Length: 76
Image (cartoon, rainbow, N blue to C red; front, side):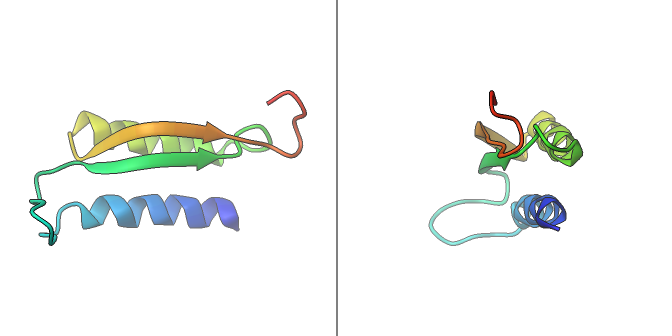
């Protein structure tokens, strides 16, 4: 369930990038994102990373970093 929440959250953040925001940011400014994943135990985060990559290709997002952690894989 957390995996789907992260995908939906990533989509919402990227969709909000098309809205005019306060603080001097325009709709054309890319959203700054840090993706937190648990890729060691499942593959759904690979899809989230692929979506983030496509938004970066469209200049709608800027990936500041990807955090990886997994309780199931001891050498992650």
